[in-house]
Image (cartoon, rainbow, N blue to C red; front, side):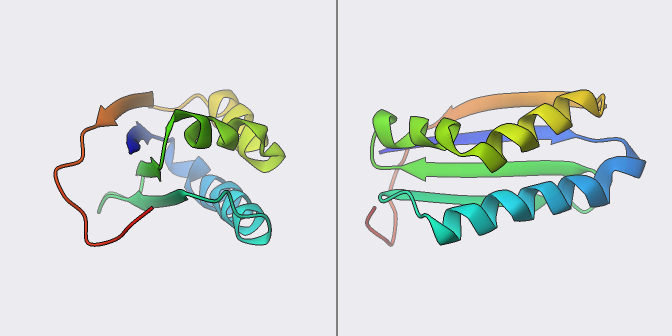
Length: 101
C-alpha cells in the first residue's frame, strides 16, 4: 500500500474556490473511480489549511491521479493562487487499517 499526505495553506480569499476545485476532482473520481484508491481532502479548524490523503494499493494506482483532468486543473489553479504555504507531500507508512484496498 502507498499513502501520501499533502498539506498546504491558501489565502483567505481563495478558500471557497479551492473547495470548489476539490469537489470537482472528487466528482470526477466518483464518476470514474480509480480501482484500489481512496482519496479525501480535509481542512483544519482555520479553514485555510488543507490536507489531502491519498491511499492506493500500489505506486501505479497512485500515479493514475495524474491522468485526471480535473486534478490537473485543481493543481494549476492552486499554484496560481499563490498559497501561503505551498503543498508539501509526505509518504505515510501503514501500521494497520480496518479496510482493504
